Image (cartoon, rainbow, N blue to C red):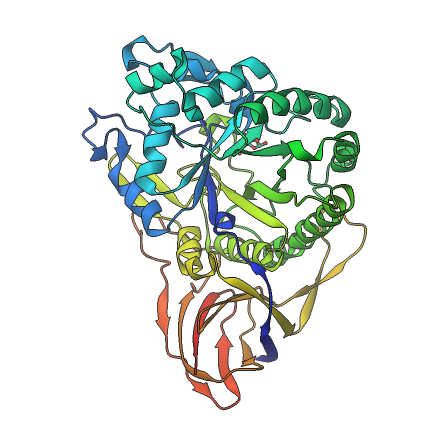
Length: 496
Ligand code: AHR
C-alpha cells in the first residue's frame, strides 16, 4: 500500500464549475437518436411523445445540463427543414457519413421537446460545410425569433408559439475534416460570414467556433487554433472555441496491463491541449472572455466502426477515464465552459445502452451520477502528493510521469466535495485528506469498483458495476481513507 496526501484550501476558490462540463452529445449516428432516444409516439416501448421514458429518467437523474445535436459529422450535411412539419411529409434522406437512411422523424421540434423533458439546454451545431449562412440564419429565426414571420408561424403550427431561446450554436463541426475540409484561415472567413448574420438577429446567443486539439496526434492541423484566432479579428463574434478528443489503447475489454496505464498517460496530452488553448485564448482575446469547450470526448475503441454504428463495450476502465477527464475539466474551470461526452446512448462511450425495451446503465453513467455535486460549485485549490508511474503518451516524444491519483475538489456552502480516481491497476493508496482551514464534522462517501477493470455492465448483468456506500470517518487530522486500486471514489465532507 502506498501513501498519499491531499491538501485543500477552501479560502482559495479558483472558479465556478460550469454545470455544462457534465454535458452530452447525441448525433444521428447508428442507434443513438433512433432507438436510443427516439422510438416514436406509436412505439410499444414506453415513451413521452416519442422519447423513451427509461432514457429520459436516466438523464433527468443525472441532471444532464446540455445536449449537443444533431452532430458531429452529420451536422454539416444536415438540412434542418427536412426535420420539421408533419412526420408523413418529411423526406427520407441519406446520412452520408454513417451510411444509413434518416427518416427525419426526429427534428428540431422533437429535439426541443426532448431537452424540455430532460430539463437541459439545447446546443445546436449548424451546417457550414454544405450549408449557407442564410439556411443557418433561418434556423435561428425558426427557433429563437419572437416576431411574427412565416417561419415563426411555422414554429407555432409545429407546436411552439413561444421561441425556444436556444443559447448555444456551433458554427460547424470539425471543419478541418468532415465539416468541409477548410484550412484555418478560410474557416475563419466562413465563420465571420455566418456569425455576422446570426449575431445580428439574436445577441443573446453564444457561438462556438470549431478548433482543433493541438496535442491530439494529428500534426496536420496542430496550428489550427493559432491560425484561426490570428485571422479572427472580430472578437465580438466568438464566445467559445471547441476541441474534440478521443482515447484508444487496446481493445475495449481485453486491454493489457500496460494499456490500462497508457490511457491515463494520454490524459496528459488533453491537459496540454487545455493549457495551450487557455493561453492562446487569453493572448488573442485579452479584453473578452472566450470559453473552451470539449464538445466531443471519450473512449473510442477499435471495435466501434461505421458498420456497427460505432457501438462498443464499456468497461470500468472507461468509467475511470471519464472520472479523470471530468476532474481535469473541473480543475481548469476558469476556462472550460462546457464538455460533451460522446455519445449519449448506444454509441461510443454511452451512458446507457438499449435493446428493444431493455436498457442498462454503463459504469460511465455512475461516474456522472456520483459527480453531480461538482456542478455549479467552486473549484478549490489543492495539492496532491502521491507516487507516479511512467507512461509514453500519444503524440509526445518522451515518457511522462502519471500521478497515481487524479483528484478534483469543490465547495458549495459548508460541503466540500472530492472525486478521486485511483489510476493504478493494483495499488491500494492510503491518503490523508486535509482541509487546511476547516474542521470536518462528518464525511460520507461512495465507491465504484470491480475486481477487474475490464468488467462491464450488460443486459445480463446490468448492475455488476454500481456505486457502493463507504464507511469513512473524520478525525482531528482530516480524513484518512484507502482508495482501492482502479476505483473511483467520491467524498462529501461537511465542515463544522
Ligand atoms: O462522434 C463520432 C464522430 O467523431 C463525430 O461525428 C465527429 O465529429 C468525430 O470525428
